Amino acid sequence: MRKKFFWMIAVVSALLIGFSSAAVAKDLVVGVDTAFVPFEFKGKDGNYTGFDIDLWKAIADRIGVQYKLQPMDFNGLIPALVTENIDVALAAIFIKSEREEKIDFSHPYFRAGLKILVPIDSKDINGPEDLAGKTIAVKTGTATVAFAETLNAKELRKFPNIDQAYLEVVTGGADAAIHDTPNVLYYASTAGKGRVKVVGPDVKAAYYGIAFPQGSPLREKVNIALLKLIEDGEYDKIYEKWFGTVPE
Image (tube, rainbow, N blue to C red; front, side):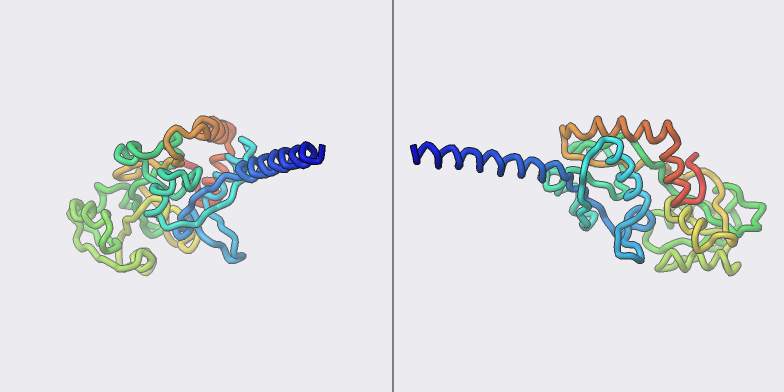
């Protein structure tokens, strides 16, 4: 009888441990690169913030999941998905065919590319075709340089930091700056507000997606939640909060 009693206790204990483990497993691990303003970064209060952080919170609320953010180097995100050490990755990850050979993506959630930044009172630059004969500021070592070299500019001024290129526009040293769409929009709505503006369409447009391990059952739920956020306008509110405008 004593053996049977202790055996029953052991079984119950194992079940309780199993239930506890299952409860913990419900907390998704979401990999983020927290050094990419304005998508993911650490705010002044020490908490992670940004467009991706807000978007994921809204999605998680819709599908009813708990999660924890896992800061990682960008280059480690895809390997972590492949080995299933994380459940989700958000880090402004471009949807590319070679990546989809290893991982799955959600529907596109952000259209990115290159944007043109000009002084607030500029009237004669409305797109890339208007940059011929102008002075353009760019960041050294980026794909933007090769694109700017095709525009027949009067002068191409290269800076090691994109903020220096933006400042060149603000102070009148350059007629325009070209850089990644999200960063240009963020600068125009924060430090450059009232001094610069963004003009023209995205150049060399591509799309970001939320990433999952291949075959993840979470993908369909996230896709449905993402579409609902777009349909009911909550996505636009999050976008406008971080970029000062609604998406095209």
